[in-house]
Amino acid sequence: MVEDIEKEYNESLHEGTASASITSDPHESTSDDDEFSKLENEMDNDFDLGALREKRMEELKREMARAKDLQKQDHGRVSEMTNEKEVIHMSAKEKRCVIHFYHRDFRRCAIMNKHLDVIAPKYLGTKFIRVLVENVPWLVEKLSIQVLPCVVCFVDGVSKDRLIGFEELGNDDAFDTATLELRLQLSGVVEKQSTIPLRSMYTDSMSSAARSGIRSRTDDSDLDDD
Image: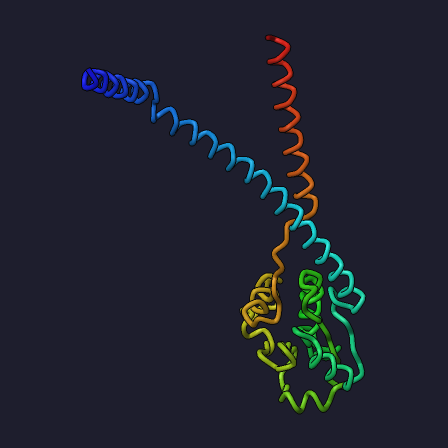
């Protein structure tokens, strides 16, 4: 009798387990897990996007503040200097400095000045200077400047490179500003800053907000239809 009851109990237990295994769909459970994972990822992505945008805005604010400080120090344009000691001090103090040694009667010096005036505003991190050779005789001799125009590139207070005449610019008076700009980039004396314009970020934010608004209105319409 006891054996029969035990047998019946075991059979019932087996049937219950089998029934549970039949009604429990492992694929359905996996599908639910996948949906939750996708939802979490979407939430994380939305959070990260907002955090990254906020971080980038802070970086842009710092860059703008730094740009204003540099402009106050005459960065962003070519400064004319006449005091030789100040020129020496400036070339040693600045992280990156371009000095154009010129003569007022040389046509090619005037051409070089014109191109540098276009380039300087693009590179606030570089100090651009022009000096008349007659005002800096010691520097002219020290740097062995014999041909004009001569553009000397200083990095960390050390003369790293120079452009003599137009030899590396096609030896043509009609060379493009971009040619000179590229040459200065190769010397390492100018460094292009990679920034996202504030207007672009504002437009992106407004577009995202507009898309969210459209989704909200669509959801409301669906509810009304129901």
